[in-house]
Image (cartoon, rainbow, N blue to C red; front, side, top):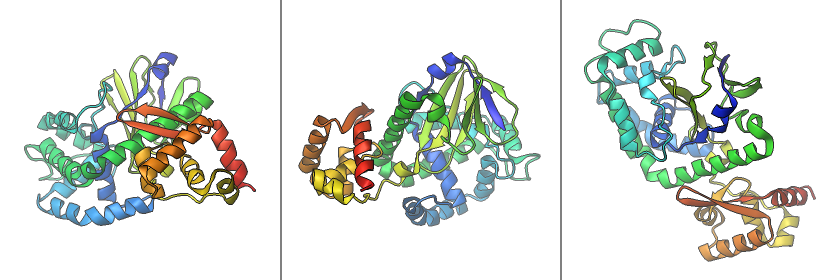
Length: 326
């Protein structure tokens, strides 16, 4: 298994980062692998895979280059494809993408030989390798991510709030276990990041970043010895936040069906606009329900980035669970 040795300062100084480039890269991986983890992702793939195939066909050899960079044979992604975020606030997509474009051909070739697992096939490399990958990522971002970015960002911010709540209630083990497949807190300052047989890495004193994305993809990256990142998929309940949950009948009688529906939906943090879309109620009605639930201590709110997200308190959790067991 692969694990990192961390110290208390590294863990305490870690932070969550929103990365448009990571979202685009995870989306590229999903388009290439064509695997969906929930109905919403399946609909997204069905809508974009045909155009993605056409985009690959328009650049001969690009499909082989993508597969080599993704590490299909080795499970090791070419390092230049996944630059570690800076961790200094939100970076525009174009600024993040520029870091890939700056990769020299010799560096890209060296990274690809590692991800491919040996000498590269003739014709796979040609001048401008990093630019070809960057152009494809820009296409993925513009065509498949950017139109949905406001909603995606809200889902990502909701995941950060949910993880932060786990951290405050159960400590780092609770927050990190299961963040991505094979990841768990081992104790003794050891963080298992995957189940592959990679050598342990000492990262004490480095900046540790957690980067949520909505596709069911993930990876780790580092920039020399000062920044390490874990890119992980948002929890399924957040990524597939397009369906309203059933309201327990006793809870509906207690609060009223509409208000109870809002409380049930707040099992995961959501914005007012998300609640309007999911419930079909007007903005004013949702706002009034939220005010009553806030005053009753059943929900709380927190600003994150550009959004204000609402989530259930412990009292709200107990009420929903109790009513659901009736």
